[in-house]
Image (cartoon, rainbow, N blue to C red):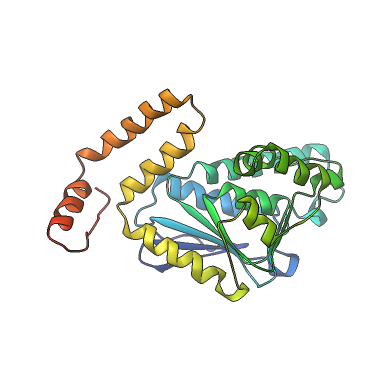
Length: 265
């Protein structure tokens, strides 16, 4: 789908059905400023309203050292309480729209992910990271706290005790520890991170897109329910797929020993 020219992002459909979104402020560690908040919110909103041919998104950062260093503290220096609140309300909408996005988002973490950058990665469905990357939620050292899902997404990913250590100390976690604790799915050599994410995105984009969306929805919302209710929610999501053209195509392709051609219908 066509996107406008953004001041802080690059968007490119790198291959059929796969959109790459690149945080593009490498001179300041891809820090999140107000304009980037507007740009990201626009991308995620457009994809929510109509993803068109996009079936999977890869989110990465420009450069080879930093994925995202978090909020732009130079922009925030001297900001009034009212201006800070308005900016953060924009960031909240942007992060929540990312979390709720119907299509999967894979983070290709090309370098360090700190504060809001770490929270952005945690808002994605899963992540591959550079072996040189480090991760931290440093807000406690700045007199604030994570406000873009960090105190919620991190404990859900790795458990309360490990999350509290990261949240309360503000100390960085190595890539190896991030993999061991389940923060990221795999580590790669720095030059291979994006390629690894693209390989997985290509696989996802080749699967039935309606099935992918229903699975994402079932995992996200079912995980917040009592188990028996979640089973029922899963079946409701499943039942929506029975009458689709893609379900008929998938069964036919299996029996005819060929690759299925899914159309998202």
